[in-house]
Each structure stands twice: as C-alpha cells, then as structure tokens.
Image (cartoon, rainbow, N blue to C red):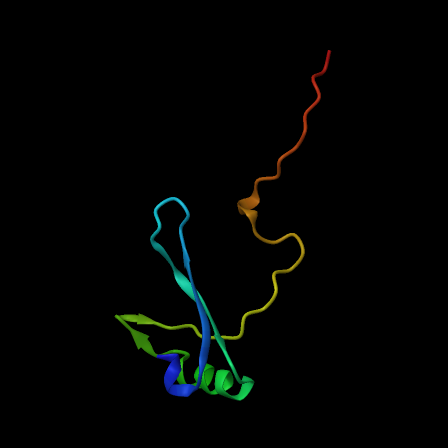
Length: 79
C-alpha cells in the first residue's frame, strides 16, 4: 500500500509477544519525508480489509508512558 507513494525502507508489524498475533498497528519507514507525507495524506481514513486506517507520523513516547500501569516497588518487611 505504501509503495505506491514512494520507497519503503522498513516495516515493523507489532505483534503480541504471547500469541504472536498482530496488535493491529505497524510502523512504516520511508526514504523521503515528502513521500511519507503523501502516503499519510493518501492513506489516512481509507479502508483496508474492512477497517478504517489511521495513518499518521509516529511521535516519541512521553516520559512515563507505557508499561500497563503496574509499577514494581521494593517492599521492606515491617516488624
């Protein structure tokens, strides 16, 4: 799908580590910024296998995001 807009350098299909099934999103790296911008404009909101695509530029995670909300803490026994 993305190759119609330019050269695709790499694709990272994100999968569930337990089941190996797709988590429903991927990262696509393209050679040229202009080609990536055209792909975003051309593919965002289109349908693929019955699902609407949300195509945008990846943003870095903000500090403290991710991880599922569980923080490991070291607990000292109280006597």
